[in-house]
Length: 271
Image (cartoon, rainbow, N blue to C red; front, side, top):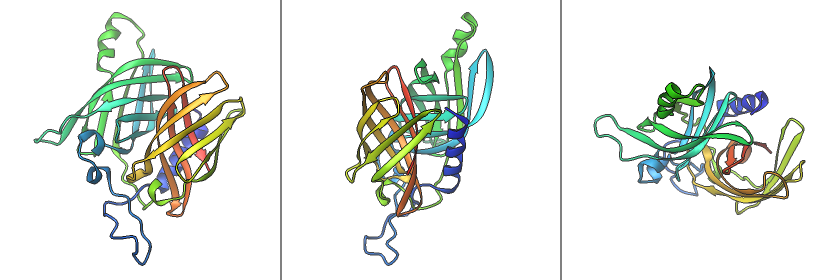
């Protein structure tokens, strides 16, 4: 969770994104425009409709409180990541039917609050989302625990749905090829094939294999399943990510996270 990674995320999100709100009128259009529909048009359940990229801030509370700009990803299957350079939350969420009065759904789920790659606190997820517009989440029971045991690690984040600015998503770009990232002295390289399966390794000896599930929605939101072997990170991982690009024909950045019960791997892959 380095400063470099946050700068890379900010720069990528500022100028790129997924498709607009219109459906593709057909594969034979004159400008070959492939538009990815918003999740709310493709899916029926509130959890699925919440999918997207969210931009806001993250407050990490432990002894002292720090607040930083953050980026969240919600996937249609209920996977959640919220990242800032002062903390990372990963987990699972579900949403009931929204209120008929104000369109609000109440978050429910569980998360891990990561303080390092192999250190996390398991905490509840409480909050609300309003009509795929704004979301607010926190650990409400942490406030009660804080009165009994100090310090207690806690979190809070607020964000707004990041409406993508261009028609770029995993369904309309070619994600195949070689991708890499560097963090400190560690370099990771993976290769994605035409079926969205991938293999790779890093400079510590870890071997990666897995697949991306393309939901074909705004922001290029995808679920990721991976197996890591041959190193201390070995295990089965799930994750969520977003793929971004400058044009429909060129994806150049994947960000997100993979996590298991005991490890997290932040993704900041460039092509």
